[in-house]
Image 1 (cartoon, rainbow, N blue to C red):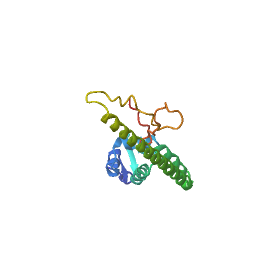
Image 2: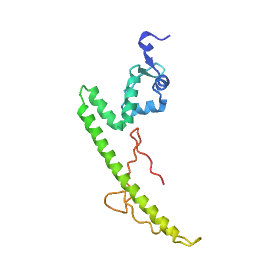
Image 3: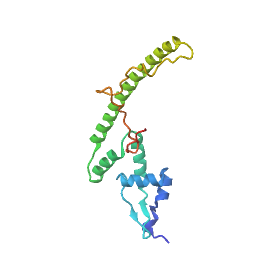
Image 4: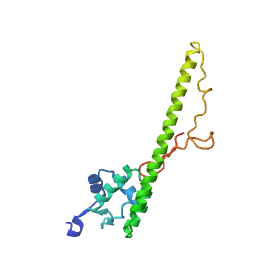
Length: 170
């Protein structure tokens, strides 16, 4: 029988279900320090306060807005130590907006380059006899997605919403 002090506590599965996430995600949030380490039962089960639901929801909204888990961990640490990181949060989001604006410009430029390339390829294909190779890839012009060295691979950010790096594809 649970006493009053444990009635308001939730086990991992209960909290995950109420928050709409997996238990693995919940434990990942703990490891990333965006969710405080929970108490443990005598059987070593994690026991979260009901307020953890609000914290998980805050984390989910912040991730959707573009914040990473390491950023959130730093912000929440400042809050827990009595600080007010509001200006830092605003500056981070402003930087994210500027980065997003730049990425949109880069993608718009890339789209224009690809459209022009497709038009060129259509002309090449029209001028190529049936069954003959048009050698499209061999005549592929350099389309730069990077700043600096044109031989570099594109430098798209490979960070997932949870703040971890996305593995490079082969």
